[in-house]
Image (tube, rainbow, N blue to C red):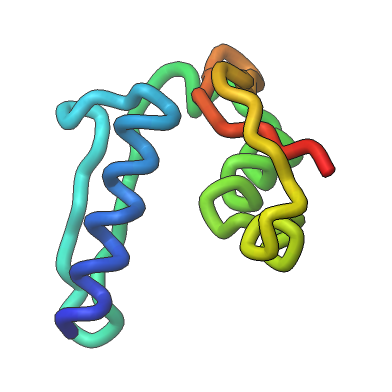
Length: 97
């Protein structure tokens, strides 16, 4: 259960630091058997369509991130890139290969 807690803390950090949600907009519940449930209650989230919500999930789960080129040092980081969708924006590090 400690690993579920650690992963939930990472998720909360991403939601607050990258997407700018406040602690008052994020509600975390312990389910007992399956770890934690995280709910974001924000007007900006309510306005998102299915594709925009999927992009957030992809970002959080690093879907499409090329780990090999990042780990091998072939990618160079560009600071200040911004991800923006449906009133939400996130500060991210863009990678160019």
